[in-house]
Length: 299
Image (cartoon, rainbow, N blue to C red; front, side, top):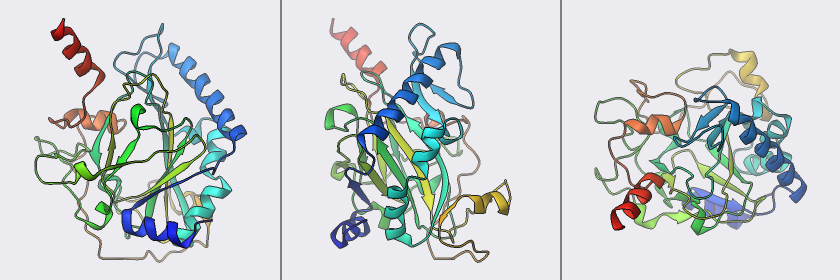
C-alpha cells in the first residue's frame, strides 16, 4: 500500500498524508451519519458518553465538539475503523495491527475548538511505541479550516511534560517550558477521503477553525499486536484479542527502551482531551471567544 519513499517519510517525519484511501461514496455515507448525530445533539444539554459539546451549544443551534467512540455507536464508523485500506497501510508499518479506540473531532466552521500541542503517547504509553493514529478527512483539510499540525521529527525526541500547574495530568504541553518546534509544524492537508497517519510520540495540535468550511476529522488509534498498554486493559485478554486486525495474538509484549511519563495523577477534568486541557493554565491557539473579545474591543 505504501511506497518505499512514503515509508521513509513516515520514519523521518513521524507522519504522512495518504490520498484517496476512502471512496467518495464511503465519505458521503460517513457525512450523512455524522449530520444525524449532530441533529441528535439537540436533545442533549451536557457532555455524555457520546457527545462532547462546544460551550456555545444549544438545542436551537447544536454544536458538537467531538463524537466519542463513534465506532461503538454506528456501523458506518465501525466499518471505517476496520477499513481494509487502512489496515493495509498499518501492516506496511508494523506487520501486525490491533485496534484501540476512536473519536470524531468536528472542528465546525467558524468556531471549531483548538487542540493544544500534545503527544498521544502521554495519554496511553505502551511497552513499545509502534502505535499511530489515523485521521480520515471527511472534508477537505485546508490551511484555513484548522488542519492538524505536526512537528516533523518530534517522534524521535523527548516525551514532554503534560501536567498542569496543579501537578495533575492535563493533556497539553506548555510551549514556554522549552522549544517544542511549533514554528516548524507542518499542516496535514488533503482532500476528503485522504488519511493522515501520525506516530504516537509526534507533537501535534490544531488551531480554531475560523473559516466558513467544515473540517470533520475521524480519528482512530492503532497499535502493533505486541504493544501492550502500561496502564492495563480493563476488559480482559479475550476482548483485547478481538481488537486484532492483522497478525496473530501474543502473550509476549515487546519491550523497548522508550521514554515514558505516566498520565498520573489523572486530569481534573475528565471526558476528552478538550476537557483535560481546561486545566492547562496556558494556551497557544486562540479560541473563538478570544476572537470575539478582540472584535468587541475594537468597536
